[in-house]
Length: 312
Image (cartoon, rainbow, N blue to C red; front, side, top):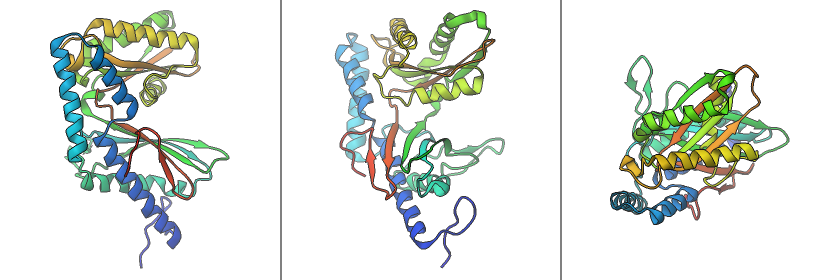
């Protein structure tokens, strides 16, 4: 019997092979689930925006969104035809027993979910311009790693980065004299120029750091935070609130049809930065913000943290 290889290329022991297959099945089912059902915080926020909307056309748009979500759940089909490029944000304990196999497991999970869910084929090899047909390819699914010492659990965030919500993504390094006013101006420029392409109301993530890549990474992590959460620093939390109010006042509204709310929220993540630069990044989640969080124990028992009452 030929056993599958681990990420290092060595064959797995029979018990580890079985565990890898079990985790692959869990992650394939969870990935498909995320494509069909929105997390509870997003559902709650959309319901709140729908209830307080006053413009008739915007109300109709919200009604169609919830009708779509009901049908996706009942028919067990993705709630948006663009099921995105798969991204996994992994916070793994150094003692998690399948840490070395996790990259291969997640790749296999994507291939299985693509067939079983099903998911639209969205992985096109750059320069080759050929769709792989499996939603996997060079560095896809994208995996962002955080290794935690003295822990043996693994928490995985699944995120489906659709084409529309990826279009407004941008990052730039500002001169220090631009100050935090420059950060605000950059966010407004991005959202008012390209935000309508991302199917509002949007979840806006802002990263503030030294360089474009660190700011962009932080902005993506920001949209993985639960809606309604706030940055622990009071000044950053104040900026979140001011940006949210200002972007809502622009009046883009659901699907860009005008309305009371343009965003579901604004989240900021930051790092210490070089004194000579202010790096700022913006990432955007669409109204169908498909992300999910699952925590896996060493024995592969799991808890779904993002979706109330979820059953795989």
